[in-house]
Image (cartoon, rainbow, N blue to C red; front, side):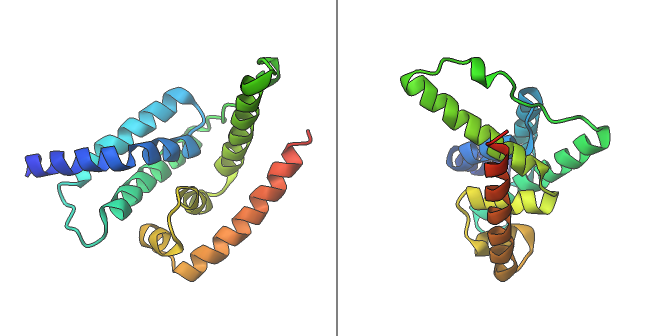
Length: 171
């Protein structure tokens, strides 16, 4: 069984490792805690594959496990009342050519992630999975919400995030 688990984990890590990194980034602003969260996602995924029975797709399983680990992490951090880390000082980076575009892109992504961090856990989970490219049906499998509820929530969250993104861009 351990050999099967190892093979499943290798496949999952290869296929969805980058997605796990993005999920960790969407749920944790601090780089050190983000690394811990990502490691916890991988360990929990490996352990969970011992009971994976194929009733859902491997992708759904990976996202479900990672989302649950992230939700637990966020709840634990909230209880500890650790503030989110802000990214001050971006204006001191070079502002020429490609470096300027990269800085602007990173600043926009950082603002978007900061806004996502402020969402309530269920909304953050839905939006993160949506940004990962999952369909409403696949998000529903992970969250146990109906595809209609997911579509409505995504529409509402996109409007909210767009409004807040533009408002925070003019500070």
